[in-house]
Length: 145
Image 1 (cartoon, rainbow, N blue to C red):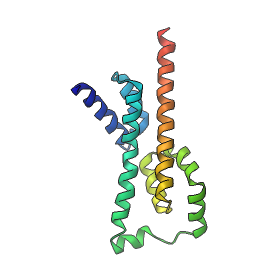
Image 2: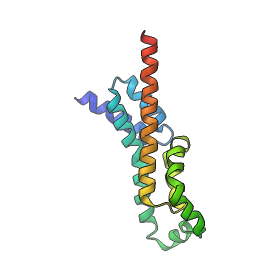
Image 3: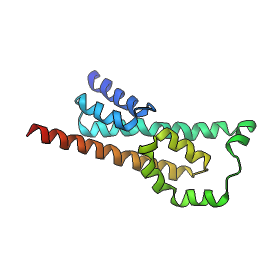
Image 4: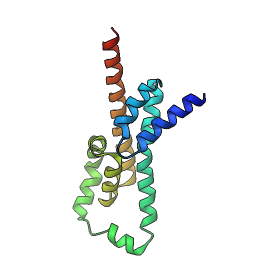
């Protein structure tokens, strides 16, 4: 049981770590011998944790007037409207490419609504984790036959 928890934590941490994220967490979890469902679950939760950290860290930071002025620079209302209308598709597509840390920080600066940020990043991370896991399993099956 300790071995499973240790491997699960490593996969979670690799998903959380900015330079590794989902692309290293999933293959590492599969290489450690975790089952695909566990790999997906722990890599996605690890990779989604920075979104929560940035969202609630941003809310805490805007309580300080000097930082609030810097973070809330005037952004065009049209841009904010477009970000909140179409942003979920950008978040789903861009999150795995730019990394969840950069995407979440950019979304907060562009004043994206929290629900869009959460659901879009969770969907993007999950889709890519499932795709990477599937490709790894397909590759393993090809080489075993």
